[in-house]
Length: 367
Image 1 (cartoon, helix red, strand yellow):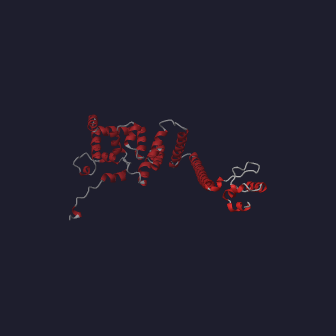
Image 2 (tube, one colour):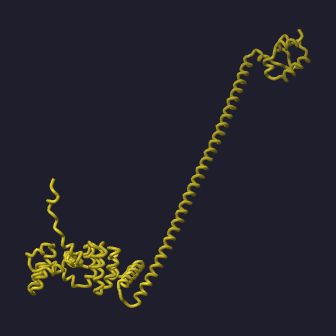
């Protein structure tokens, strides 16, 4: 196992050290302080950007011919120096870089060359990765602008330090184009108010109206916070009303569903009762039909038995009718008894006349 002490140590990053000590333009400052000796040990401490900037500055300070040579050898550094000389563009670049806007977004907004932008950022404003160091930001970003009299720029940098890329885009757009809607106009006015407040709080000395403006801004902020609190309360009340409405709607749907189930159950029970009644009626009709059929069958059977009996050949006649066809035993029967017998026979049921006892009739006739 290798000894950790034998590993090659990483070289100390003097560039980052100088960035913390000198500020975002440390590379350009170091390039102007290094001696014109390439073999000097201090030249090897720093990165390639510092060495190239050092050579560029040496050529530019030598003669007009050296200026041409420097621009030919280091065109990107020459372009970065040209950008640094444009104060209006530099202010916007500082806001964009400090807010950590992407290089593509900066190129689209400000129309600079991307390679020149990278070189300018490395040499003059290396602040993209140091936004979280609040003390460093105050010491090397905000205070130098205030000391130089760029109070507006300092206020904008303080604002974008807290809101990031979105705030930088809003600040850059506030001065570049007209608002398209009422919402954008209101947002721009609030942004300008915040910038003025930052400017007023940044200035250590100034006329009395600065302090009045600070007090007015504080009052407006308090009123805005109060309105936001009221708005949150209204939103909560609306949400509560909406929840109650949804709960009432759910309860109403549940009640309708229960009523629907009750109606369906009542209809089902009514159908069952009607079906039972219909089944009972059908059973009664069927029993009646069977009973009628049985009675009819019994009647027909009785008629058939009566027709098959010898008594079915007997007949009865009146006394004044000829007696030729009467049986021998009936020829001597008196007319009165015959009439009485005929009348009694007419009053008897058919079954008794058919199935009556012959001996009873014979006994009523004298021998």
